[in-house]
Image 1 (tube, helix red, strand yellow):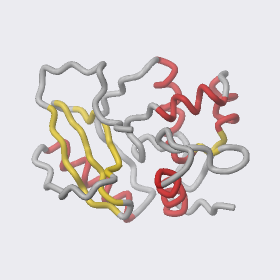
Image 2 (image 1 turned 90 degrees about the vertical axis):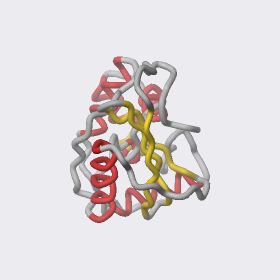
Image 3 (image 1 turned 60 degrees about the horizontal axis):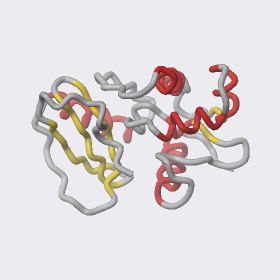
Image 4 (image 1 turned 180 degrees about the horizontal axis):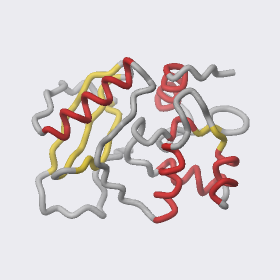
Length: 169
């Protein structure tokens, strides 16, 4: 499921992309003007490119720093195209420290919501890793990641949690 630009975006500026190699495979970064508009895991073998825009260079640098040190803090302008509720969930996700997890249910209680609504907001997160929805798990098991409940996306979620020092049962 592509997680890049959405139909809600204005198309007055040219979209730029960059592809960077990471321990998880390639990540495609999307930007329009002075904001990132999304990140997508590439499952094909497209060649990586050197980002040309200063914003994409900064995003690539911060992401690569994260893969060396999971305590890296991200400071990038993001175009958060979502509902008010989704934005509340995404902001709550950024408060979960690396190496820690929270269940969908406990996050929902903090937000006065339901676990399924939290899971739906996580599924629409266009900025995996930057907005760490991988830190939200089910009471029993991992839950999903990037809209998937099996396959390579759960392998990525496991890798990210282990990288951050979160032991998996």
